[in-house]
Image 1 (cartoon, rainbow, N blue to C red):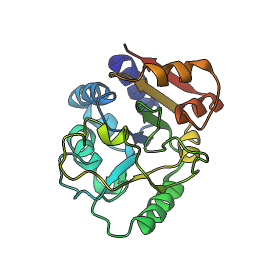
Image 2 (spheres, helix red, strand yellow):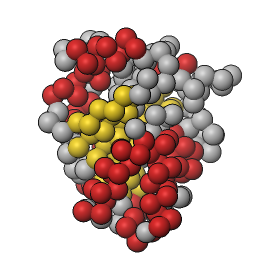
Image 3 (cartoon, helix red, strand yellow):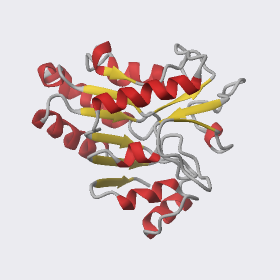
Length: 222
């Protein structure tokens, strides 16, 4: 799964060097990012114009905390692929003003858009980013109330102090990407995967909204 996804992303980067990549965190995309690192070792020049935007962030943790999305992306993408500050955009985990931070990231996305490729994982409750199941899904960058199952994610499950909220691109921001790659792996996702593959779109399982997009590669392991 990771190799196929990486081949797709790398081919797109070669075709469009200043591609805007929206990057998810978590176990599912890690293999993809490691493979991109191997491509970078061989041909670093292919990545000199690549732009990256962070999909989401845990709120209430300091940026250097190893559980943050910032720490993960710095480790797996930003530093290994040589992405400088002018080509990296996303939520500040240190923000004291989350509403203003959402406005700032939305403006950055508007200035850089469209997203060329959006890498997504899927939560056990089928969330995308931190767009949790709800009666109404939020279109754009927003503060997310985190579901109990989300707080059991491996990134934060062992923390004494859990994230108090989430910051995330909205469902419409995600669906506005030209190309979406959904990577599904890990335990506990059988029900969410079943609902996804049913083809029925419902806010109870946010990932099902991907059926409304014309260019999604869905890769499932397990």
